[in-house]
Amino acid sequence: MEMIEYQRHAERTAGDHECLEDRLANFSMGLSGEAGEVTDYLKKVIFHGHELDEDKLCKELGDVLWYVATLATSAGLTLEDVAWKNVEKLRKRYPDGFDPQKSINREESKNTCPYCGTTLIYTGGCKQCPDPACGWSSCG
Image 1 (cartoon, rainbow, N blue to C red):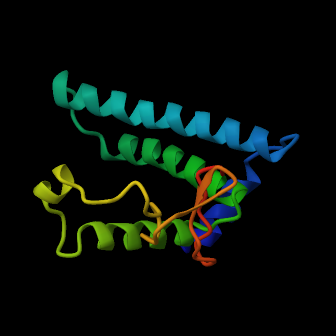
Image 2: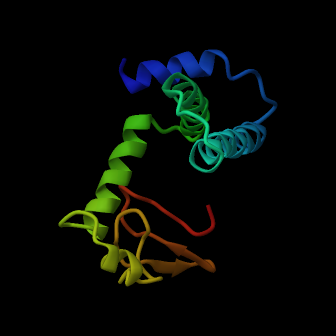
């Protein structure tokens, strides 16, 4: 299945919301709750001696994915957009693959865009990325 197709399926069951703010609040809180369910399940597997049930884990991860998909759709993003931005960020952070020392001693500046690495500018009290393809802002 293509991820955009999954987003369409997820949106079918997203329900009606009064406004974008309601969608973002509902789906972000739902994501947090479902991520907590995954964590709680794995805690039981790791520390309480439960057997790992791949089907149960798959269903719980699917719930997490549903909320990520609906949040992305709410923000006008595709899951492909989200995935590529993450890959780009990690390539810059770990060009030779993950390195624990680079993780501990991150050289990222507070004045660089967290998404594309461009030096930020200050406008109207907000940090903003001048790259029009990115458009990140500390003010949202």
